[in-house]
Length: 289
Length: 289
Image (tube, rainbow over all chains, first blue to last red; front, side, top):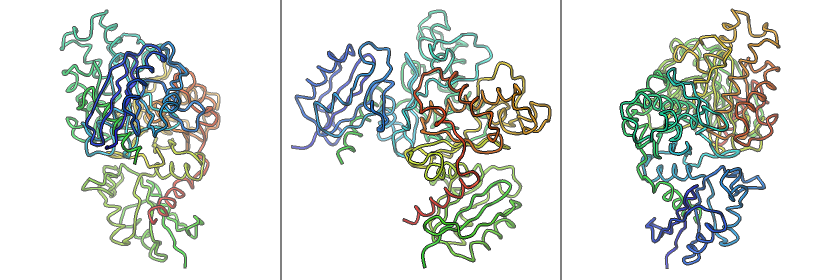
């Protein structure tokens, strides 16, 4: 019998678990609501008990501890989500299944999936930015997951304000950081409570959104020099934003750094909701080598 | 006879060339003024002709092309420095010496030197930021030089302005980007032409400088999560700045991301002017393996 591999994309609202063969064919998959660890993890273990896998990739919501030198390596750390703060996620997995694991963020696994099978196929580097209820970013550099002392928190960088934007921002830590200005709740609050998908496509607020997302792309370019910047998440499904982001990027960068053609550089996620699970499975297979 | 290795730290005002044995003992070294390629490179070749090395690390001023898929890989590209734009630096070297090379930026080699032998010894990642006549940044992530489509240009990120800073900025591309607000010439222009080292240590302008450098450190932390951020270059010799940068970093980050203790995180270059040459030699020795 051939080997099978496991994946957990652990999100703040749901967990997706999957099992694949060594050719990445998904054999089964389940969605489990993220309630409290005792409930959610009981379902996770039930799923994997049925078909023991030989290695597993986990991409988790965070913040999480990815520092192997840390005593809390493998923990979800300071999340406000009830029950999950200081939860020893990886430790709990290891107590159930003594197999190789890859442990990183939900956005890092999505970046890895896109690099190997999605929009950044054939590249060695990319940034994956999801803009939804929050803003999160992950990356791959020189073919490896972007990690250091901890993991990136690309959604919280400070920005130069758009001159016509009077919105004060929604981040409890930084007010008007990228997430505080650009995540879905900020878009809606700026527009007096109108849902993002009800805001007209030609509204000035989209220009403001594009300006900030372009500035974020500029910073990622200047700091990381990735080969692709890939957008996922709800707000990024606003198709009208992409040409505006590229145009604003061009204006703000002002020709200083050479990039790939912007239509090929600032792009949509290609694997959609499967980016994360794909990344987890690829990392699981590699961990078994 | 044991093997010897070569290093070129190619700066905009001078080239430093060195030869070492396999234990990194420097056997000889020369400084050559950066005039025009014909003159400067003639001296470089004369230096290495005397003692042929078996591999070489080159850290060059830029922008340079580090993209191996590019037709101009190995070139200095768009520098305003007369004679050096579109100069095929690496190609010229290879025509003289058919040996393995490592080719990257001056700040990347300094980051590598500091990682292996300086302030970031024992780590896998760091950022090296030099603040002098310009602002340049390099990095090492997962033990590898930080490169992607091109190389980082960390000095040109846009910033949130300090509320009391009215200076318009000096960057010809972006006006008030990090370099435009924080490099030596900007510090002097803000202070009506007074040289940086003549500005009193308790002047408000240093608080402004620290605010911007702290914001840069915050962005590097959020995007890269390095284990150390290392400052080199002239302005960073202002000792009073370091506690101020750390304090401002703490205030701006507002506890969102865990970092090492700030006294161990935002630090001075340890190898001083030797960081770059050390990195070049280490990379040369590794290229020969």
